[in-house]
Length: 137
Image (cartoon, rainbow, N blue to C red):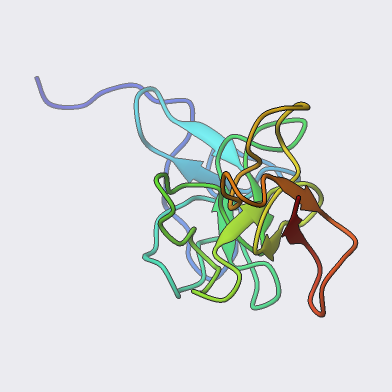
């Protein structure tokens, strides 16, 4: 009981490097034994996660070469619900690169229904529509 040994300590504020971390991974996430990350998914939808910026406010804990990376949006909802960082007009997050919100995502093989599409228009054409992807026959 009492004190526990950790890899790092969440002991600095204002973007300063936490004890046990370095400039490449400055933030300590104290879950488990503690891990150093570029960012931490610690804020609610519409807020800027620790280590992120206004342009890429959402920390995707499962991306990047070494763990967490800041993105425009997160692919974190199912069943047609709007992903974090997106809105009802463009509800689906494609996490390639910094992440982009889309009406649909070309993510299924031939004969299957792409995410955001329907039986009547099953194929997402990523290069169509006024604002990117649109479902087509």
